[in-house]
Image (cartoon, rainbow, N blue to C red; front, side, top):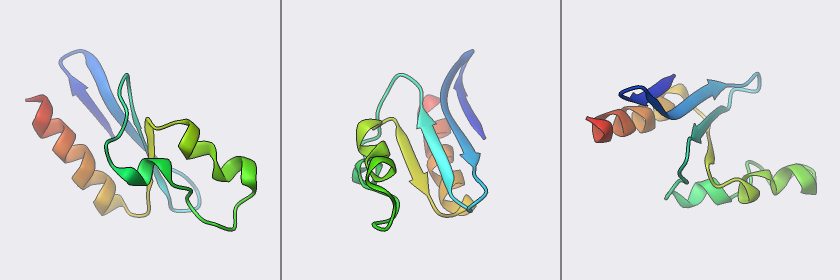
Length: 78
């Protein structure tokens, strides 16, 4: 899924094999506090801190939630 503002990409969403959806904002960061939290507590320390280092990424568990967030961004771009 991609949200565009005219010719400029605002955000991208991609599904990974484990069922997670990774949403990435281009030239912005997420206001949602979940963007700065680890996916799971049992991940290795280096990977667990990945999302705290990159606040432009947000991981969600379902396609429904990814679509809702991307739809909200699309509405805001209109």
